[in-house]
Amino acid sequence: MQGQSPTPDGRVADAVKDNWVDIYAPAWTRPYLRLSRADRPIGTWLLLLPCWWGLALAMIAGQNPRWEDLWIFVGCGLGAWLMRGAGCTWNDITDRDIDGGVERTRSRPIPSGQVSVKGALTWMALQCLLAFGILLTFNQAAIAMGILALFPVAIYPFAKRFTWWPQIFLGLAFNWGAMLTWVAHSGRLEWPAVVLYMAGMAWTLFYDTIYAHQDTEDDALIGVKSTARLFGERSPTWLRRFIVATVSLMGLAILVAVQPAGSVLALALALCAPWAMGWHMTWQLRAFDAENNDRLLSLFRLNRDTGLIPLIFLGLALFA
Image 1: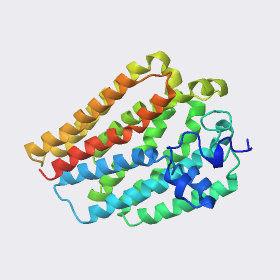
Image 2 (image 1 turned 60 degrees about the vertical axis):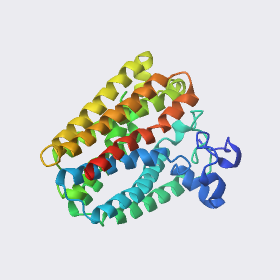
Image 3 (image 1 turned 90 degrees about the vertical axis):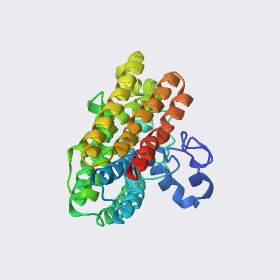
């Protein structure tokens, strides 16, 4: 579905107001940067933060932080920006007809005619190649983990066509970094990283259910499935369950990782991470209003802070 952009200057409807892409980026780059959601940085944060959780917990568990971990930290930041962009590009290619029928997404670059499918495929390939170059600087086990991550990324855009739980597939893709960075540090995959990965998945179910409530009416008209549509008025109950799962699983991951070798102070500080994160999620739940799209988007974006909170406590535990 191609046509004229429905917003001034090709801007995307739900982009951050006065974002750097719309103001400072050269005009010819803007459609491609919008395709990568560079005008909406929250997705990069949501992909990156589990990477940093996994790295921090691996360093605490092994009691062996190294200078190489600084590059893993930085490399994950660069890689998350690139792979989030590549994933969003792939999502928009596969969803180009669906996006044209949804009010919030019809201004995206492909349905609005700013970028062709061929151009989008080329842009996606470039981002993937650059991200792969960063991945090659990690150990072999981490490289293998990074390649495996492509499978849930590839499947996710199609999930809403065959399951009411597409957010599970988003969680599989977005939290893979918790395991990858553990492996990048330690050279092997261990149970604390897997449990932390599951905690991230529960968190994704929480924030993306909130996000999906913006589109329930349009999704119903075009037959797109989501947890928001599945839960309906029961969403607050399910969101509460996702909070409990996130806190419990993150707490378990920390106990298994830190208790054998860490100090009592390190364990106590680390366990503050899921506790504080849970309170922030609970505050979001209290503000949840399925009929208020502006609030839904605001709550979704607040999850950058939700994910930073445990990182603060894990960082403190690392030096305890």
